[in-house]
Length: 235
Image (tube, rainbow, N blue to C red; front, top):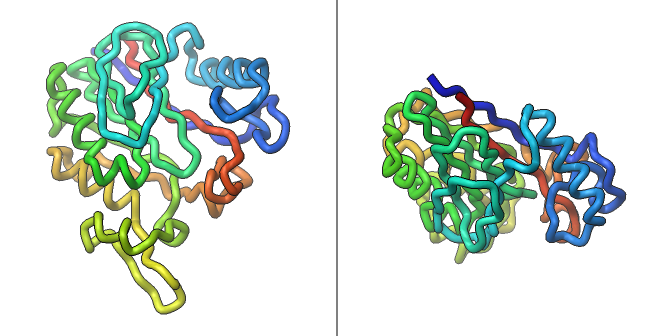
């Protein structure tokens, strides 16, 4: 039966200088391209694969999911699914959540990028549906919601809060504006898409509160590196 390897990088262990220090894998943020390629090589090596097998998404904070069969950069999408062994599906993040999914028995893996816009648009559920179209069973899928902004860190305007279910919107007297629990919203979406509760896990880490370990777009004021959440199917 196929097996799966998945991993999420931190900002540590690379060669980039400030403000991308040190393991920036994002090509689009202004970092030295030579450093980015070395960082990608190191990340891929940690997952026992090669950058030649990397698939990345041209993320636009939407809900488009694409099936891929060969290494490439897939433009204008936020979700990737594949049945091709050795392909490393990688999502770039720095406060948004990487969601990694797998049905090893069916030989299907998926990954998606979920910020608030993607979550509202149903990116996690759409990725599950795309995987089901390629033979995965939602009730057999396992999912990991990676490090992102926590409920305590994710302050939003009322117009954003209004687009989420009230169960994941939180208000406190000490908070001038509402906060959204993005991880809880994504876990609810995965459950509604057919995943079992005990097949869904969410990271305890907050990218903003732990910005010495993770890149945080919000914490840096917009100039920072990117991490990868990635998954690969193996035979």
